Image (cartoon, rainbow, N blue to C red; front, side, top):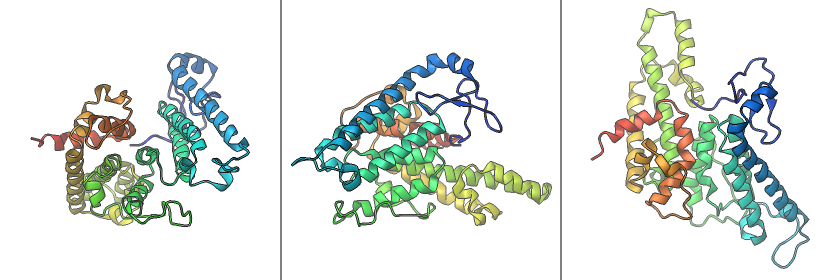
Length: 341
């Protein structure tokens, strides 16, 4: 369902177990069996590899400039040590933040767990440096968490922004205020109004995918229950464990041991439908583009407004890989789209 953390050769896909793979020393997110396989894959890899290498070099230059800045009337010294949380408000930090996001975009050209994990680390640290997220990178993070199999973290992150993050009196300048402190929220609860109304389309897309993942796993458990007593319980338990691919369901003993998944299936189907309808009302372009993306995946809009084609393009690009890496997720949307007028 998600990217595998097991490293594999980018040329022949060998890996796992006791395989000894070497890391591309330029991008540091792609592995190979040997030098011959790296050379054979070079033509396909050199574009994104060079982009990552250049992105890191630019980021290092920008960071060096900030760390060596002596401080003046506009830029205080010791930015990283004493001003984390307020970066965007200090004008001199903006080239650094833009360079770091450019590196994130370069990393995400490569579809490996290592690349997504590296991008995720950068985005999380950028939010630490600028809590108020003036760049809007919070719209990208949920899909990265889903691609890494961190579904619970995805829900917790989105719920914080849908609740505390929307409070009018929240003081972003006070670093003692709780920040991203939602942990272990109920992923099965009815979708918050913030998601159904698609106030943040990218988060709604991610929550919809998360709910579909739950639905796919529960349906798989339901189908396995139909075997009943025809197979030994030990074999059935093993089979159910293999069918479930997400950690949320796998770690829920009550759901894993239940013999009647029908009520939960109906609940999740209703929630997915509500989220689908909400996103469709918010941006009519999004679901059709997910099913048939075309050039929307390569468009580079400079700005967007709510409900616009440009908004769809940015949100689609942020979320598309997570959807494609979840087997059966797009089929759920296709079924819902059949009932569209």
